[in-house]
Length: 311
Image 1 (tube, one colour):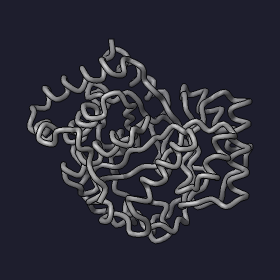
Image 2 (cartoon, rainbow, N blue to C red; image 1 turned 60 degrees about the horizontal axis):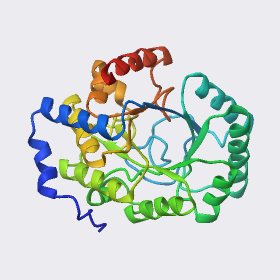
Image 3 (cartoon, one colour; image 1 turned 90 degrees about the vertical axis):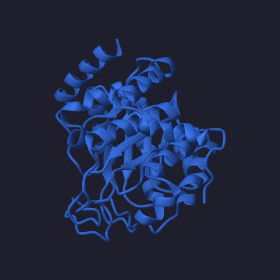
Image 4 (cartoon, helix red, strand yellow; image 1 turned 45 degrees about the vertical axis):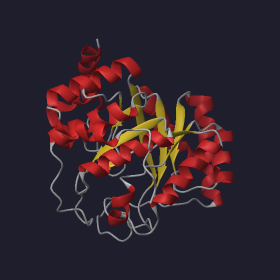
């Protein structure tokens, strides 16, 4: 079992759960203002290779073990990846993420993605991130040399709950990939999903482990149960619990980028701006992997609301 960071007082962390919601929101917002200021990081991702994943993650629509009827296609052409990167920049994103299904790449795929990263950096002028599975040190070094800035590899949940949602790879393997990405000089984006049936202690443990790992960016996804997956019948997390979770992550992680990602429209609905009062300072725009996001104009209206909160 992966050890939780000892320097953090566990009893103090657990007290956060007993605070009235307005009080914990106020505390989280103060931490955000003092530790990260008013900068808002906008990211956009591309599902560059979809479906037929051999892993069995219970939350994921792209597993070949589930019947979700999502689009299935091989790795997109370089020209298509570059075009989506252009659109991401046009929509105001500061970082563009290339995402592929599966837990590894073959040599041809690695070469195409490396070439795409190089050309995006050269022609588009947007920072490039990638989420490509459990790559080895040599593969990550190739991507870093091509111009990759940040590697995304979620831990998903706590080590205790991880085996409840994935059996084809371990929590320790996720951690090992994160350390390898850091070893080659890449920034790391790592977070997870809440609302999968985990406990509050699982969420706290997840936040503390991410602090110990010293990741740079933490995306928080809010599970939207997808028909055909083993979690299709789970009751969605409440808006209040989602907001409290964001508060806890900000208070524990202090100066890290905390992004609200998939599920924000469905779970938070008209209270998305409150997530930024709760300490979030980033979000994904332009849609997700298999779930369509809001129109970019709606998100820019939200960004204006956030700017007023941040004043």
